[in-house]
Image 1 (spheres, rainbow, N blue to C red):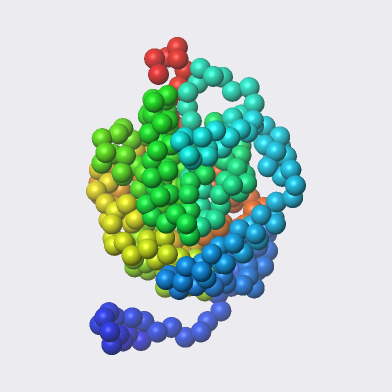
Image 2 (image 1 turned 30 degrees about the vertical axis):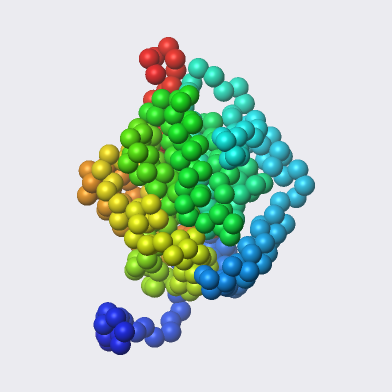
Length: 341
């Protein structure tokens, strides 16, 4: 049934309540995860203008996030994944550095990773965890940017930090040897970092990998609506989070919503999402925007995956990691000093 809204005169379709079964085509582990996620409670966020409410909400989410990490978890994971973990700084920005054991220092390839977390969480110990996981998955040295976040530091502070770290990395590494990766809000920052770097006359990296990128803060993507309630993480209830990050800035600004930017000259890019990911539309639209700009871009959409994949443990997630690893290794030169890199 098609109707017209009273306020915007945009057409819409009314759907009856229906059951959406877990597909049998995915692994048994993924099926179990989807069944468990059906009862996952939705996070409620304060109004974008309620700064006090946001401070309470962010503190609670960070506390819950850290409660999942037992003491010594970060160094234990580093040992399990065979990487050395240190923390450096670029100005006032902490940067976690994870390097595979025995890495040949003449190989200058490096990954710049920007963590997800909706611009409000995912820093500190969690950023270290994600840096270790990325290095273990990709088999390359990774630098994870522990950028500033809301509520104290909304846009453009996180982007400023990411660009500062990229700028510093360029002073020691050929850009063709750098890959930038990010998930969700981190993918937003990754795309915005490349866009702003290019606009400021800096060379772009050799490759980029974006998982479920949030690239349209106007929230006009189809799956914001069609998958609302099916994705346990992403849905219309999260709109206020994006408003809080933007804090009154035009959401169509390309540095906030890279899908609206001029993407010419972007590096080869891999994009990934799932058929239950609320940001599937953002991912698909950014892929098309890159292709229209003449960029070498791949799109991988995985059956029944949500915004956070299957929350760990499903073989499909290992497949995702293998695809990203292959892509990054394909597009970065070896970085050996003796081959002219």
